[in-house]
Length: 137
Image (cartoon, rainbow, N blue to C red; front, side, top):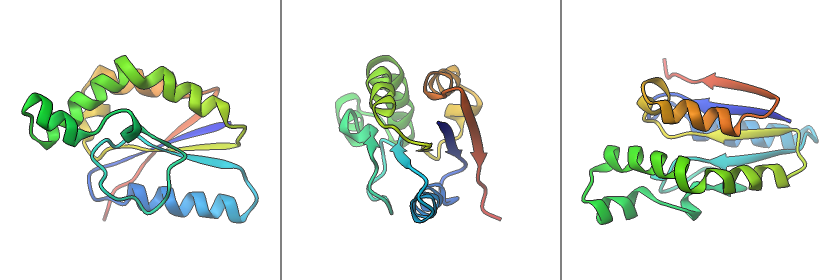
């Protein structure tokens, strides 16, 4: 299994790439699943096999803790790491697949400046993994 973390700034096309890559793999008979880790996504161009929004959403955290959008995404990432990560990891392992495409939130500080991002990547990455950094030019 190859786990591909698709990261990049907001609006760079991570979800679109996830959808296109997944369709290409499917068209070539390569088994793959998609994982949405963006708790603030209101619409996705693909139907995720595993979705963090089944466990928590940025909207719920904004209301519950009186947070703004970015604060809610950071809080959601912290809660993901402490409350839902192992459930998601077990869900991923339950699929017998060649590729796991992980669509991440656009708040890059989660992966660049916060230890929780590294923790999530290390926990979800299997024996083979890659980070695909996408940027709009």
